[in-house]
Length: 516
Ligand code: ZN
Image (cartoon, rainbow, N blue to C red; front, side):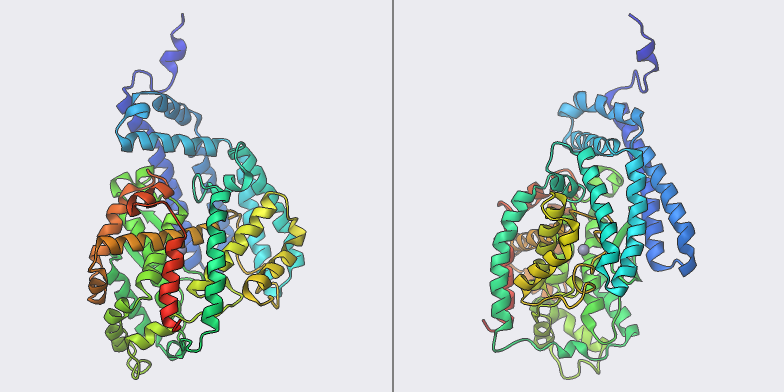
């Protein structure tokens, strides 16, 4: 027998532990490059001068190529397979075996994507987003539809390459909600939709509706900046490991284990824009800051899924931030910041104003109750396109018909209808359902947290958020990506994932605010 193959194959003679260390080194090195991508993306949205975009696109494309190359290096893949088939992969400590299993899963998915398709997706995404901006400004579906046609075709190709045995929509969702099945999600959404349509009808028909005008007074921006910064710090966002900036569309991105960036937008005439933008993104940020930092760049240091990520933002934004307990603590702070606007108001007044329910066309401006109806509409339509039962050409009519059925309104323009979101242009198909999955997880987690901490309301009313944050750190953040989203939530809450907790939470809180 010849020994030349064995002696030249990478890593020969290494112990499984040494091999694991080498695989982790390479995975962290790819993650380091990807984190530079995140920094460039953040800079593009915050401080990039208007004419800097052209060269930035070249920088981003060059980095994307390097990241893909690092992630799909065949020698790296070969080492992962050897590890997975060895003692550490089969029966190593849970963190190690889980890391190997997930690195193998990621490697296989990345490696099955031809470099040509990666390039085409990146290029089409930039071009389609430009076309989308122009089409939305003119409210012109006709000029954007061909781009959407192209993007959906590329995404179907991606699904067929990466997970050929799965339903194509499930394959696309896998990037955001690993192992999710559209059938299971559709079952939950159907139950939720029936309940929500009824709740919206009850709220909009209620005799005593919340009056939101107190939130539409003048809130000077300088005072808003200090106020939201203080609120984010008080719930636990660590400004020594993160920062807050201004963008058109709020987001949260992580640049390093001690560097989490959140953004918001401001409206002098509507306090909730900045405050709830920050509570939402700080909720994402608390999750990122709570992930095991020693595992940064590896699965135990990564978020479980976008649904779990969204559960953290929604929990702080809605379940904590819109509660009367929160406003008992927050109101004196708010009155100090805005003495004129809130001169004649009190905590109950402001909290109730935040609970107004009003069907509207734009998802990102929707109230908490109608929001999920916006998401479910997109979930059903994009799935039908991916699965080939709805031609892109018919998407606008399908959107308008469905909107009228669910909301009792017909979009007066494409900009207020099918053209409002950037997701499809950006290639984020299969992403929308994670918003409502996150709301479902959030309500179930909050219910469990309240059960585990009977004094939680009193703590929140006193501005003590550490108990809730510690619970989330322990039950959610500490597990990184090792458990998978459903198992993570089931383990934390002691029961199967169900939309019932969200229905009950919305009914209770919005029913009370509307005198139902
Ligand atoms: Zn979010």
